[in-house]
Image (cartoon, rainbow, N blue to C red; front, side, top):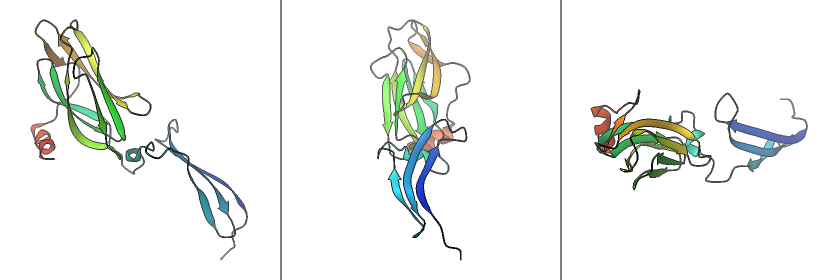
Length: 170
């Protein structure tokens, strides 16, 4: 067995993906060649490390419509982020929401209500990561002020009946 030689600083960086654009965490420490050990600590703030994103297979951020009725929409959302916020353009009494779960959150439901005074048009529901407040998923709805109804726009999708039953069992 060959003896290890030397000592020095060690830097290990964890990225969100292969593009290396977003740093999840960084570890700095030192290597001791005599004992062949590394000592140091994470540079991240505990509780802000996005533990749901540093696992081997993180959840993909997504939203699906469970139910729509007039100005109300109930969605199912999953996220790898420890804290996620939701904002429905146009405001309303229940136009914001959040998921707060260390390690991310498998599907949970949230209800949103459109502001009935908004003019007819397309509005988005934004799902944002809690730390950087950037969109991680969006859905587009059309608001018809006269009929006071929301409808999906484009290729947004709904959960199947079996997926809804599975969600309700949790």
